[in-house]
Length: 245
Length: 203
Image (tube, rainbow over all chains, first blue to last red):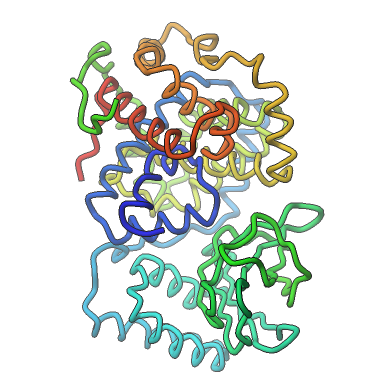
């Protein structure tokens, strides 16, 4: 889904009435279309007015609990350069910084894979906002590396940051998925929760970098082969499962 | 209905002055600087709204309390990311609250189970439930009046999505409508609401 197709989702997106894949696709669309971002901001503002009718006083104990939890929670730093399109040179510099920071953390292999794949995906006009968020994960002070091999070949590397609440998944070297098959990435919550799709590769695609959001303690990242176009729930045995944080 | 442009603004009453809204924006900026006194005040303004929304969508006070705590701590953690050029602080907070609450609803059950269950009961659920919860506050009356100004399909599509946490695919099934129709009704319904409520975001 691109262009006008994806934009037809603007109302549903503002109402949170899209699935995770559509949400990610629409976020990419917004990062590339400033006029759309303003339009959707107005829909969001409108949608949240619907909450005005739902006012309910919470139990008094909640106040102490929230204030105590906040006092023990570090805050995110301001993010001064989230918007605006950087020049290719500036962009390269930032990627180099990201790669270097990863190197410092001892994640050399991941950095190499990241830089190589990023360069290739650049040709596909990867959305700046996503790249930015990836960089934030890669350079987060609590960035941690997890990796595992796919049954059948290929490797998945995951950099997760609880602080950023995000992770970057790098899949490379996987064998061609075969006709009518694609690789799909899943986040499996701890316990008996339903796996959530966090990335879908195109037909024939054997490598990718995906930003995953909402990384929760105890979650597992899984990769499976699914029918072309993806599946709402995993339909085949996972090729790999990587516990995240 | 095919006109995606603006409807005449101000079909409702003139917007109520909203001192709380601008106060929330100011408090959020203070919280971003680590001001815990500001956060305490912000809590008092936001907690009933966040808890009320979570309770409405989750329909379970215990789960709503847990969700509201999570959202309010998230507001503390990410206050520096609030961007006034993208809308009001209240809208920013309620967007976080709604998205997380809806994610919770959806993760609890496989989508197919949920849809079956909902389809079985939804016939008896009044779509404009908002009417029951209207208080004397002028703003709530205005929201209701503006909802009443939508077509039936627009109103149902929007309230099932926002209060029910349904995806547009589920809404299409519930209303026995085509997917493109539901997407369009959500969008043009929001446009009509936006104009009726005089919502503007100036970047």
